[in-house]
View 1 (cartoon, rainbow, N blue to C red):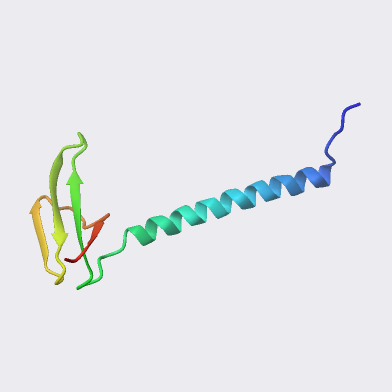
View 2: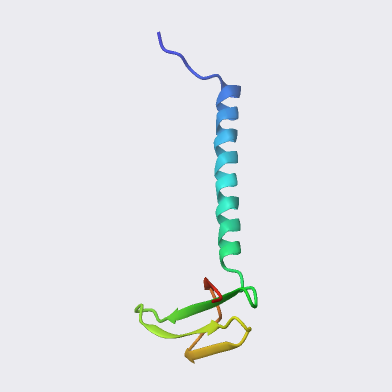
Length: 87
C-alpha cells in the first residue's frame, strides 16, 4: 500500500520550503550588507583592492583609524572592505 500526500498538504509543504528559501536569502543579504560597512573612526581601519578582469590587482586603498583615505593605482569604488582593529 502506498501513501500519497493530499493536495492541501503538498501546498503547505511547498509554502514552507519557499518560506525557508526566502528567509535564507534575506539572511545572506543582511550578512553581506553588514560586512560591507565603512570602518568606525578611531576603532577600526579598512582596506580594499581593485582587480581587473584577469584577476590582477590594479589598485586599492585604505581608510586609516583617523579617517584619512589613501589610495594607489586605480582604486575604483571603495569596498568591499577588510576591517581591522586600530592598534
